[in-house]
Length: 94
Image (tube, rainbow, N blue to C red; front, side):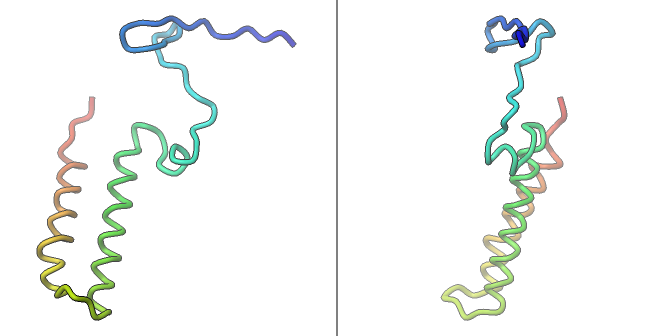
């Protein structure tokens, strides 16, 4: 079969088709399939970081570490989580 390729033009933002949109890749790759679309990737990454921080913080509560658990939560976990929530809810939608 002879399938016609979409016409692609180059502008100052890169290649675009006739509708002015960037051509989409049919294969998003490993990270693309894990984090989702480019619009949802920052939210997914922040969610993963929050979950990891909570897990690591919980581990400090149950296992003996060189860092005091309360100090770790006060100085690392809670400030990082609030900063990530501030980023998520503070960023404006375009």
